[in-house]
Image 1: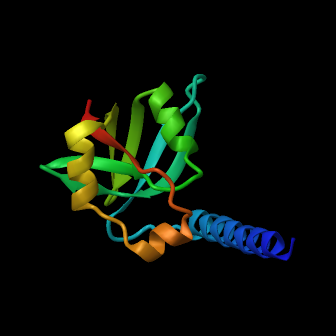
Image 2: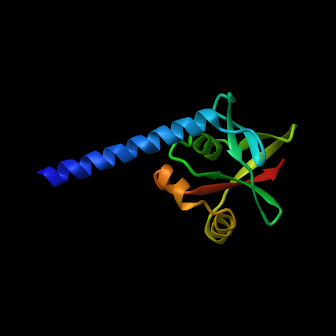
Length: 133
């Protein structure tokens, strides 16, 4: 019974570290460098802001859902309208889901480090492409 207790304790400790890291990252998300503020919209057209990293590939703009909390991604899938504030400019975009070869290319060009993946609990990574309106 003791090995089960040890494994359970280690697992719960790891889950706690992931939850703490994700919470702190969401709260202290920096707004500098390649960061941008996106606004997604719910069914009643209420906007929700989130700071995310701006990714680029082949001259296109992408956003990655790299974390377990990803309400913005679900909203963007339901309502593809998105407003982006980047370097003081506000632009409107249409969100396009990325799959297949395009997903693999963007993922390899914007890979994440092992430490970051460990701290975020190895979430699946999804991308959206932002097409100008």
